[in-house]
Image (cartoon, rainbow, N blue to C red; front, side, top):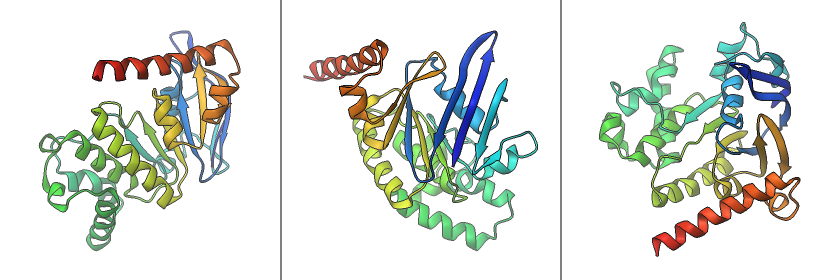
Length: 250
């Protein structure tokens, strides 16, 4: 489904992505994880054509991404970001159906798809006529997910989609996302700082540091068979954060 072939990307002389190669199979759920600045969000920007790599190729379904193909490729990718990225002057309904309208979908087809997505994401129908400022954080993220799914894309990429939510809402949405991913069977590329979230939502975890992949495998691999001292340190830091959080809450 997706292939990064020796991709390099630099900003101001600093390599955000360093000759990275990665293949994601159709239907696979993969989480990119690592410290801030490791290059994981840059990979998503490269995948949707927001930036062009200095070297290497990006392929989607075997076709190389290029300036000539990037617009068509974007329409085949569902993209959900941390704060939802909703247009504040549009209702939830209009945010979700915006691109379908631009592509000329008939009103009946848009309405049918919208109803199906509202059911899938458990968003009450009255919320569709509210503006983003009138929605809760969890509701905004459901709307953002519906917008990402509106054109029935494959793959779906999510950049820290739950990072700004409080723990209870985040846990509920993690459960719902896992259920949705299983139901749809689509290719999922998730970026997160949270190892627990990555383990819960993804089949495969890719840990990055300084623009490179330092380990690629399952959660069990990272914990029991760390590939380097950095992996061990990263896992321990996540454990320490969880312990500190539970101690603070008590």
